[in-house]
Structure formats: C-alpha cells, structure tokens
Image 1 (tube, one colour):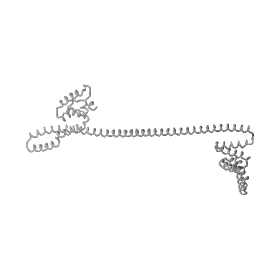
Image 2 (cartoon, helix red, strand yellow):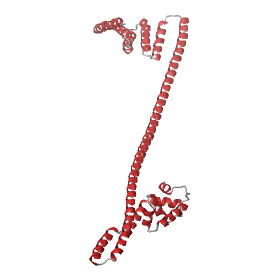
Image 3 (tube, rainbow, N blue to C red):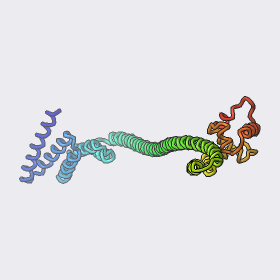
Image 4 (spheres, rainbow, N blue to C red):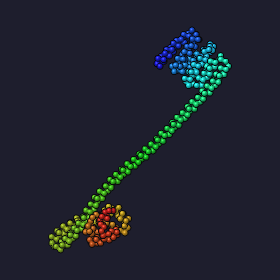
Length: 338
C-alpha cells in the first residue's frame, strides 16, 4: 500500500511538471490531460476534494475545446469523486450526464432502454438516500434521548446523594451532640452526687456536734448547780471556768436551726417527691424522713428535735403507717430509694 501511495505521489510531481510546461506553451490539450491526471492521482491518494478541483478544470477545457468524445469520461470521473465524498445527488447528476453522452450515438431503442434503467437507478438511489437519512435521523434522535436520559439520571443521582449526605451529616451531628450532652449530664450528676455525699457527711457531723453540744450543756448545767452550792474563792473560780465552757460549747439553738435549713436545701427534691406521693405528710414528718435517711439513731433524732426518744419511736411508727409500710419493710431503705 505504501509503495502504491509513493507511485501516485510521484505521479503528482510528474503531472504538475507537465502542467507547468503546457501552461508555458499555452498547450490546452496538454493542460487538460495534466488536470485529468492530477485529479486521478489525488483521488487514489484519498483526497477527493482536490480531485474534484482538477476534474472540473479538465471538464472546463474539454467543453472549451469541444472534445465531445472526452465528456463521458470526465463526467464519470467527477461522479466517482463526489461518491467518495458521499455527495450522492451530485454524483448521480454527473453519472446521468456520463450515461447520456455514452449512448449519444446509439439508436432510439437503446436510448429508451437507457432511460428506463436511468429512471430505475434514480428511484433506487433516491430510496437509498431517503432510507439513510431516516436512519441517520433516528440515530440522532436515539442519541439525544440517551443523552437526556443520562443527564436526568445524573441529576437525580446527584440530588439523592446530596440529600442522603445532608441527612447523614445531620444525624451524625445530632448523635454527637446527644453523646456530648449525655457525657455532660453524667459529669454533672457525678459532681452533684459528690456534693450531696459531702453535704450528707457535713450534716451528720453537724448533727453529732449538736447532740454532743446539748449533752455537754446538760453536764455543764449540772456542774453549775453543784458549783452554786460551793462557797469561797473556789466557788468563784469554778463559776468563771464553767461560764467560759458554757459559752464555747452551748450553741444548740443556732446549730439546730442551721442544721434544719441545710436539711431543707439538700432535701428539696426529696421533699417534693414525698409530697407528690404522700400528700398527708406534715413538714415535721418530712424532716423526720430526712434524718432517717442520714442514718441517725433515735437518741440523735430526739436531741435534734428536742423531744424524748420515746416520742421519736412513736413518730416513726406513725410515719410508717402514712407511708403504707408493713412491719417487714425497712423504713431506712424505703426512704433511700427516693
């Protein structure tokens, strides 16, 4: 194939040289043949546009010189070149001219047969062209439909992806926020529980201090009574010592009031829950519940409430009934469950 191309390329050079010589000498016959040769060479080299250019120059000179016998061949060359370009209508028009000049000198019968063949060829050619056009239009239509469907698909896919991405991001943020909130609540609860535990210890210590203070006060009061019965300098010294001791130790009323205030603050939510569940409880009942929750014994509670231990026991029994507890129920465990 490369050898053939080289031969046609060489032919082009020879034909161009012949054309220059013919043009210099104004040799129209030589020019026409050079044009024809150049058109043929370009067509073989798959360059139909250049082939048509030189074929048309050749045809023009043939018409100018009146070389009727060459017309049929030049029309056929142009028909073939246009066929290469798929210019079927132009190719067919040159082919008809070719046929007419080919049979120009034939009899009427031959001309009629040619005309019938020519008409049949024209019909088949046009039908083929129309079919090709329909097929081409259908292909273009199908390609457009596919393209639109592809665009719609990718639009839909993009929208769905964005929506899912937003949902996923939102859910992730909500979960993360909830996790942080739970963590914060847990930390706050731990801090609150630690504070409650410390306050419970403080309250218990305060209760013990109050109980001890009152006991000390009673002991000191008894000593004061004994001192009053003594006489002389000794009596005066003992009175001074007892007075100092009493001032340092007896603060029962102030401590008790402070203790009950702290109990009320610490047990506010506990009070609310008890009131909601047992509306028949009095304020003293609820305070008794708080002291029992602190695991204080009867003697300590009696001291804080300034009543006899027997009264504490009676109040406990009354409280159990109000709380609907049986004899087997543990009052301390029940109250700590709140």
